[in-house]
Length: 456
Ligand SMILES: Cc1ncc(COP(=O)(O)O)c(C=O)c1O
Image (cartoon, rainbow, N blue to C red; front, side, top):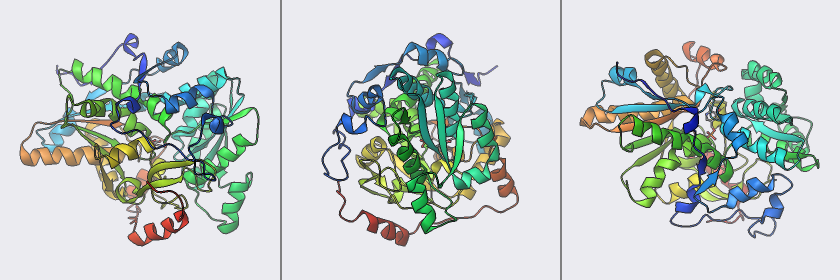
């Protein structure tokens, strides 16, 4: 029988994370203090993050040791399987060989626990008692609630209101893991009250929920903040996905893939999967490897956003980050891929996109769901709405191979399952999914808020 799953043993869980900062051709621009416009030092971040994570944020070391306690928790679901998508290949009648890394096998159903466990661990080491965070689709809030209970930490989650309403079971599962959940914007914080005063029916956004969680953490000594994406240390922890996938492809008898694809919200699953492969392009042993990020057309930070300094949150509480952005005040349309509704992009991903080392493409939600349903009917797995974007991207690449007859190896990251997203599939089958367009006029309007802020 031909192999469908390529598996590694527990002993083969990587012992080190990969830090792409060591291989960048030009150094990253630093985060800036919004008042002084000077680079922020570690002390400015200390009220929010433990020192170990701040050090990882700026580290130039290529490999960073994974603590044993984190690795042993990883063993609950890692190494995750790599699949050869034989049935999808057949349906597409493609000459490409398609592989996907399946992160939905984690207890919470996505890639998010890879960093949640690490962040909870380092906070516990520093004596912190409570973590706050934002969540969009609910995957990150679930992952952090899951991780916090292993380390006896309290977890307060601000959940984007539209997802809170669309996905009631997500709240239930966060509570099952001991997390506390509030819909955002909430009246509990000054940031939330400010948004509600302007729009009582605000659907919320990741940017707004981040403002609330940061404000909450900054106001208490025993509390830190945990971010589920965007920052360098989060991308670092997620590199375990790509490192495993590289070993698995080798085991399957493949050299490095020709095309690497990931869906893009803030950038953590994309970078976690892609950066270990991108390394080979950067160091020159496979310059022609193509790395493609797939984002929603309604929130196209990489394909339409400007590369400049902006706040990571909606209200302006974070340092200024160098990133592709649609403007921190932008509230994306209520698409079902809640985890992709973020105005900005990880600085590391923005940096390599700016250097033309990666590509980006934007898709509408309807064509993504078409691809997600085709995938479920050929491979059997129900993808999260976010993950349907990468499936669409991989299918497009495979169809191009069918046209050209090329036998490329396409590898993509299937970042999560959609078992809590049935409302989205129901809407799809009822013909109720809407097409949302992001216009130049919207960009122009959002950018007005950034006037006077430093550019790159
Ligand atoms: C399943 C899934 N995929 C992707 C994302 C997007 O985040 P990131 O771009 O950081 O991977 C999320 C975020 O919540 C998610 O839940």
